[in-house]
Length: 364
Image 1 (tube, rainbow, N blue to C red):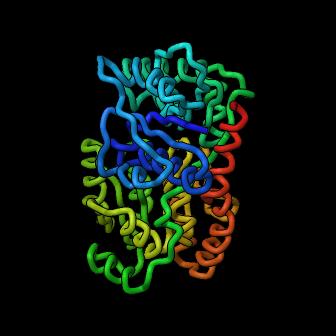
Image 2 (cartoon, helix red, strand yellow):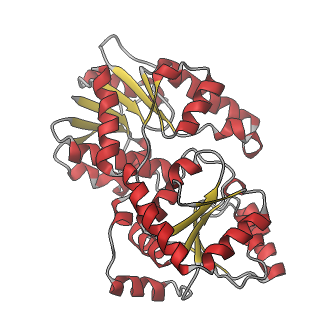
């Protein structure tokens, strides 16, 4: 098969959508090397150039023109003889020619419908139009969780039979056991506490870091946070930290390998988000053999499994009691980390690649 991808995020994004897109192409090219994988975009960059070194991955520049991603990219895929075009971030091109091609789109979440307060009116309308149009145009929709599948049916009014759930994985760095010397280097480089809890993700209201910080008041438990900041919300956090003297350390400029080491150095990973399409940081923590505390809502129990600890993200007392419970019980942390590592194998590359290929093969 020849499979073409909308590669904009592969070359432009350093966060969730970019990581998903790069990992998807990487695992497929490795586990199913007999296929051709074509990345279509206006330009390339260092973010995705590692993929282009693979023998079965190539790049095609989108034809020039106004709104070329919307009006030219689909035809470009058809003109190179692609069997399938896969939109990796909820969108499909608007224009096609008469050459045969099957269309697949991945929808990660519909948070703009569930939490409209975080979006402008016009952004919500544009998102909804693009997602719904792609969902109806696609031959198959990939949802990254059962939660997202339910939302696609409920909000976009798409037939359930058209949707397949294929979970996300995570970067290979989180599955590797780093040498003690490297862990010591990372601990020294970032001046990390001897023991700490960790939070990873964009610092924005939906991720609910404020309630985690409030839950640590009076506990003397250090918190390390890795993630890009939304300025207004970050100022609110700073005010809370100053008033209640919570020990919080914010890290920036952290590479994937360094982040993997920080996960392993942490005693507990806390992710009390109000809503997620999937929650890759939970998977990263489980592969890193770190005990997880996460929310009992949205898809997070799908990602965390039965041995993670679950909290009501709105209940500060609940978050505090669960953190203290694990913080004070090393044997319980170890037990849950071991069980979590067993559970998370369902998100390994070979499983995900097999599920993806099953979707492609059902079409051709």
